[in-house]
Length: 229
Image (tube, rainbow, N blue to C red; front, side):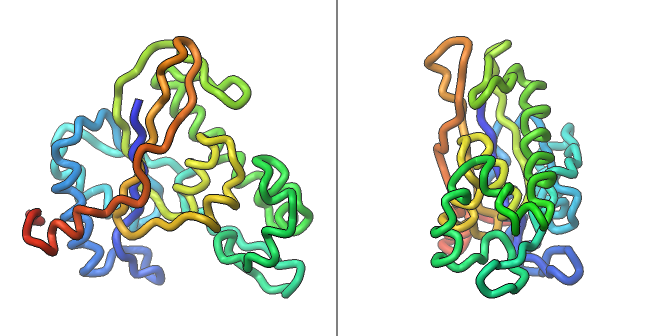
C-alpha cells in the first residue's frame, strides 16, 4: 500500500485559501499526479488544503475527496516553560525541547505538563485514531505498534493536508514522537511525501518512508518540462 501525503500550495493564511501563486502550484502538482493510480482522496477540512486537492481532482473525473477532520492543521499552542510564551509545536527552541526526555517518546511528549495543559493528548490521539480507522478500510488493522494484514492491498491513497498534520500522521505510522518530525523535517508547498508498507512479513506490516518533501514538479515547471493546464 502507498500513502501520498501532500502539503497545500502557498496560502493566504488569514483567508485560509490559496494565493495566486498557490493556485498555480496546485495546478502544477495536479499535472504531476495525473498519471498516478490513486484509489481514493482524503483532505483536511481547511480551505487551503481543499483547494489544492480540488485542482488534482480535476484530473480524476470519477473521484471525490472525503473530508477528514483529523487532517486539520495541528495548530494547538503550548506554553514554553522557559520563556512562558505560547509557541507552535514546530517552533520550539532546540535548547528547550531537546533537553526534555519525554519529547522523544511517542506517548510521553504529550504527557509533559505544558503539552498536557494545551490539550495535545486529545488532539494527537484523534490523528492516530483517524489514521488507523482509515487503514482498516484497506485491510490493515493496528496491533500495538505494527499492522496486521487482513488482506493484501496495493492501493495508493492521497492525503491533502498541512505541515503539522502530515508530520503527526507520519510520526504515528513510524511509531515515533511527532516532536522529532516537527523539529527535524521540512515540507515545502505542494511537496509530496510517500510511505509504503513493508510487505515482506506476510501477516504483519509496518510503513517505510520512500519519499519526503519532493517538489520536483515545481522545478520541472520552471525548466519548461511540465505544464500547468
